[in-house]
Figure (cartoon, rainbow, N blue to C red):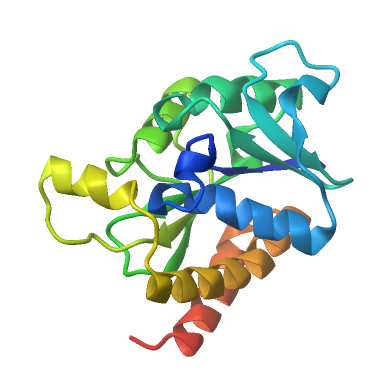
Length: 202
């Protein structure tokens, strides 16, 4: 059974190393780990929907990076999922989370958008919030105002933060592969939350 792993981010080199693009970054790590190459959406066949994405395909799963900008992510995710005839529980979304400490990872079987525009778009276009997700902590930064939040998510990681995010990216790979193979998000949560807690004590 095919499963879809989606990383959220913004397209283009301007945003490549920013906090908001950590979903893209983790999918890049996963593709490299599995020897997969991302291709332009124009090469996905048979498929007739929007092509603003890149994808990498294995026999068991597809990696998808929407290139519509964050707040339009669902405009790609929904038609690609439909093309593969996937129900929401066969789609896992990886994205940045302000409310988690830098580098913390949390799996969830479903939930709301939590103020994240990419997740809001995805939920709206899928017509459901009943899909698993991997939240990647980026911390809240220097303030809670709307302007401070925007500046924070669109800034590159500092040198010290890069170390933490690289560690988190490597930790995420095993969990994502486990989910693609078994499709059991509850078991995945049990196994990996315990492992991550042991590795990164509170």
